[in-house]
Amino acid sequence: MKINELVNILEGRVVCGEQFLDREIEYGFASDLMSDVLTLDIDKLVLITGLNNLQTIRTAEMADIECIVFARNKRIHPSMVELAAEHQMVLVECRFSMFKAVARLSAAGLKPVY
Amino acid sequence: MTFKFEIEGGNFSKAGNASSAVKKILKQINVPPAIIKRLVVALYEGEVNVVAHARKGWIKVVIEPEEIFVNIEDEGPGIPNIELAMQEGYSTASQKVREMGFGAGMGLPNMKKNADLLNITSQVGKGTNVEIIIFLNQSHK
Image 1 (spheres, each protein chain N blue to C red):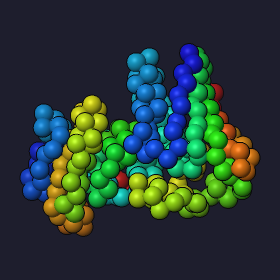
Image 2 (cartoon, each protein chain N blue to C red):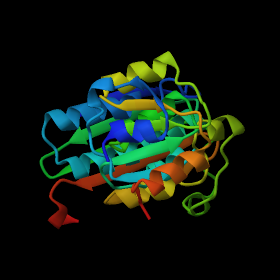
Image 3 (cartoon, one colour):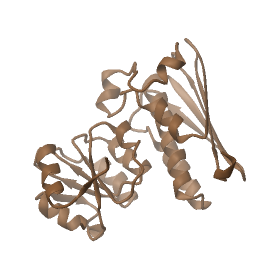
Image 4 (tube, chains in turn blue, red):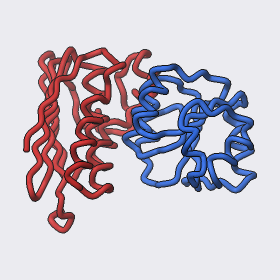
């Protein structure tokens, strides 16, 4: 699915990367543990997390992840936006719990990594 | 080509700056993306470890035609039992480190997974030295 569709499904708010919403996303991974995210080796992945700090963006940069959804109504800080913009990432705020966000995306056809 | 970076222990706002700079350099010289990813993930785990555990540290990256060599050296508490530290799930990280999304005992095993060669030496009370080699021609592995 395109990121635009993902944003609609999650009733999310795009905070960074509006110009990249037509990118394709195929897989989803939900975690607050960045070391787990760093074990992944897959493209076209959206990270769903509740961890709203700079290391989430850094981790996504290292793992070549281009889209991050912040669930549980977590707010994205300006320093995160600045770093994400530098690396052309899409950041989305979502008021749903991680469980609900993942359930909706799974029902819409997003695939698990494993 | 040799590049050197300093790492500030405890400063999570800067954790990853060196790894990010290395990633940019490797992209510029057209290293294959799969190799870049393996190297920067291993390097980033190492950089986070220095920030999480040590007072300060240094990263040296040497890019040669056949391989990329990374040395991560720190002044810190050292690792009393490296074999134990290499086990997935073993961690001595603080609550602060865990709040940053790390400290689950995945760092060293993940570095091992991504490196072609990994060598760790440590002196308790002095510091830790990590050497990573990734071959650019994977048939040398």
